[in-house]
Structure formats: C-alpha cells, structure tokens
Length: 105
Image (cartoon, rainbow, N blue to C red; front, side):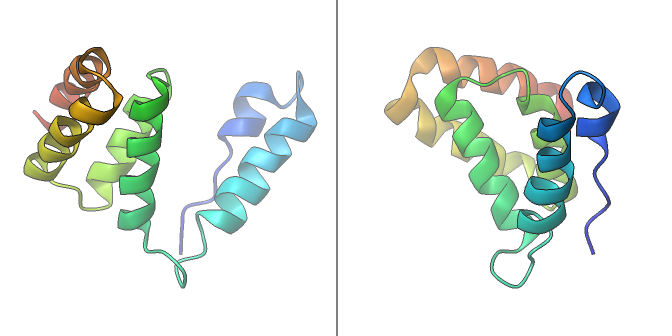
C-alpha cells in the first residue's frame, strides 16, 4: 500500500485547502494508490517523463527520488532522459540530468 501523502496539506493546507485535499486524497490517495491498473514503477516512469516534457523542474527532484525508490535504475533514467532530449529539447534534458545526477549518485 502506498504511503499516505500529506504534502498538500503540509504546504498549502491553510492557503489552498481544496487544492491540498485534491492533491493528497485524490491524486495520491486514489490515483497513485491504484496499483491494480498501474504499478508504482510505471507511474513513476510516466510522471518523470511528463515533468521533464513540461519543464516542471521544481517537482522533478521529489518524483525522481520516488522513481528511484520505485525501482527505476540509473541506467534507465539516463536512457529515458536521452530519449526525451530528441523529442522535448536538449535544455530540458540537461536540466533533468543535473537533477538525476544528484539523486542517483
């Protein structure tokens, strides 16, 4: 079973309580917790890819750490970023590699 997420409430609970509840209870409490449809490793692979594609680098360190914890290897993350470089841009790849190096080294 997935760990209960409280980041939304911890960081935005007073400022944006509805968003915090949706983050913790729906995104992580229902979607991420649904291991019957996608395994956590697959969700991590998809999420990291989406964040790199969008250039959402503020959230990437957290999700790369989750990906590592979910079994994504250094070789796999390197191959993923290299593949994405040709589709989403070289600068996005450089930024992603700089984050990945900190997590996997």
